[in-house]
Length: 247
Image (cartoon, rainbow, N blue to C red; front, side, top):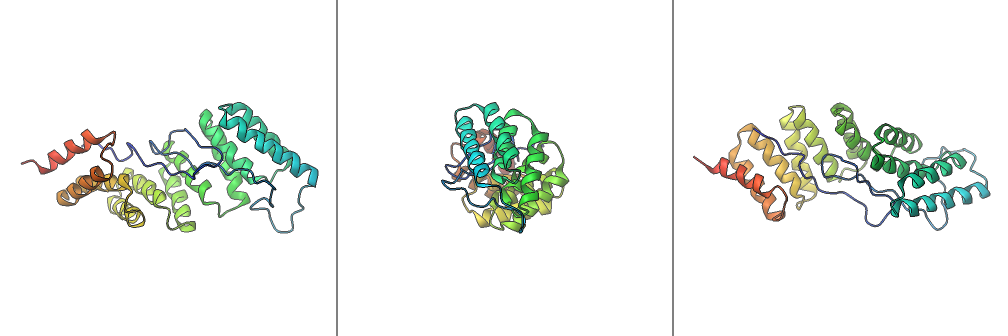
């Protein structure tokens, strides 16, 4: 029976900030965009207490490079953005936001190993940086490393228990592993947090279908179509409904 759990997942973006990745994720999902540079740079998140701050002139130069990198990225000049983020990091090695945004730029270039390495840096600087775990989980999932994807989604959920998209993504990974009860639990949590999360209903409906729970699958597919009447996979879902309701 064909699956379409990961066909079109909802986007989970912070509005109007920094970089937004176009790299493939659980198909259709984008990574969190990076933060914008502040008008006046605060202490970099995640710096160890007692660490000596950069000298003022370095901070100014690093921030100027960061802002230039953002502008380049928004203009579609990804290579230039990466070069400027790299220079900013060279001047201020604890510049968490520069690592984070460069990771997204690397994703856009298809340099997933480098993106993961930058997310590693972000997490080393700030172990509570939820978005880095969420984004890294997407990369691990796309490489087929389901255990690591689940681990990162689990950390994101622990840090931000209302992150419905992390529950949805972890549910997909559990389904891929054949852990259907755990997948249903995660999709159920996703729609409990966000009752309008159409894709989580569709994904749960597919798992119910796999389990032979026809009434539950029908209810979820119908809810999906109600919430997403113009969904790209509408015909496929309607066919599934017809199969479930047939003789």
